[in-house]
Image (tube, rainbow, N blue to C red):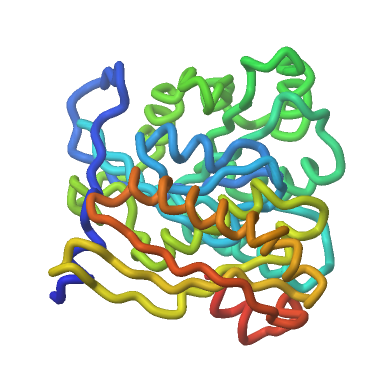
Length: 322
């Protein structure tokens, strides 16, 4: 294993969630791959970060921020849950959205258990019905989390009525009200998922909290910092290309050359900003965020380039969306 591969495991450590209390009779350790599904902005990434106690998925107010099946690992005395954060299930026939929908559907088929997160601040509509239909064949392995109950706009009773009507056969004990942001009832969700999990050996060492490679994590942090500062269509028109990585200063610093890629020349100036102010801010804030994740320094050379109509290119989408 080379130095970069060793450092890909750096900092991959998790612990039992605060206040964790196992319950029930003593059994062998359980292991399950759990697919997280829900509409865009339902709180899937926030749940994953809270449950694992680490920064796994990037978070922003922009729908469909998550584009890949991102894995986060939770280890407790009951075993190991390997969560897969899927893209928000969105009704659209655009090529990029079709790819994202395909990623979500594939994860449900192969998962040992499913966590369906529903946003209590939004009335169930067509997209929620489509998401529920996607989950419906897998109810025997599904836990539902009604999220954002801490919000003044929460309509928990309305959402629970929708669930009772849509999933009349689902056990009430597997519908749990939560606040992923405030860490409310997260342990109850974990316990419900363990109850559906098979006894099996762990898939990852206990010190791992994700299996993401370094270049992917760096690209996602850069993209998070960009989309939280850009407006209108720009967040969806961006992807990050890690062009090069090199260890410097006797292995104490990782130098990274990355490109923020946009679809049109007119978008390039918006990302750079007046006097290069925007791209400088994205670079500085990305470095700050990365220092919270990795134990070593990261020096970032960040530039902007045009990748014309990239959302229509099958080969590129296959490389970006996994």
